Amino acid sequence: MRRRGLTVLAAGALSTVQDRGRPGLAELGIGRSGAADRRSLALANRLVGNAASAAGIEVTFGGLAVQARGELLVAVTGAPCALDTRPTGDAGSNAPFYLRDGDRLFFGPPRTGLRTYVAVRGGIDVPPVLGSRSTDLLAGVGPERLTEGTDLVVGNEVAGEPSVDLAAVADPPDGVVDVSVVPGPRDDWFVSSALGVLTGQPYEVTSESNRIGMRLQGPELARARDDELPSEGMVPGSLQVPPSGRPTLFLADHPVTGGYPVIAVVARSDVDRAAQARPGQPLRFHLSRGQAR
Image (cartoon, rainbow, N blue to C red; front, side, top):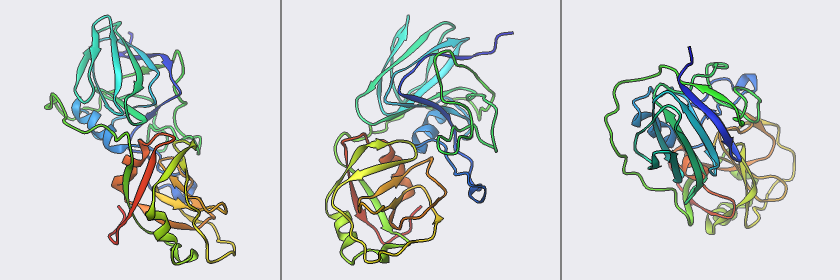
């Protein structure tokens, strides 16, 4: 018997299966991974009545095309793409809609933001690896990235009936992205003015960015110490500064350890916002003396 699900017709630049990740395995050299924008995936799951643990699809800058096998309830969140459902017509973001058996759904480039999330009622049912269905590009753990011809089946991770027709959420910004940071564990490895430099003007996201981290272009952050730092643990949102003096912002698939000093850490709630920034888009850091989350 044919199982309900989605067949990938085109995968775009990068489309992967993601859930909330696999925390607690850093001592094995495996990071959490999971959705780069966890809020958007969580919203998509809520819109179709899924359990919070359900896996969906993360789409990088559109380009995904899928065909439904059976009738499916779907929601799309995050970076707002033009959605073309054939033969029924257009669909919208941040609201559940049905795909009938044989319907095709095409994702254009997003108006703003970078990453779009697709939830199907029941969740994407791929074999879990170490407790998660997430694709970790750095560790090579989890399902392969999606390609043309990939068949995805729907599971049964539901939490109840959908209760929201439309989520009134703002699109990712298309200008400066403001994020909060707290001083990092090695801010004393930099000159006293370095945190002021970091927060004094925006840094631009470069094309050397992916789910692992975002290389940023901007003023150099001068170090006060030139000795080597033993490798130590990293968390999402770490702003690690290599010898170039320009920071890298670690995202979902970040390494679990690093040997360059971390000058600051982005608040966990703002890592989702930063993960939606495109190459060429500016990030502006604001220093907070509170706790990173």
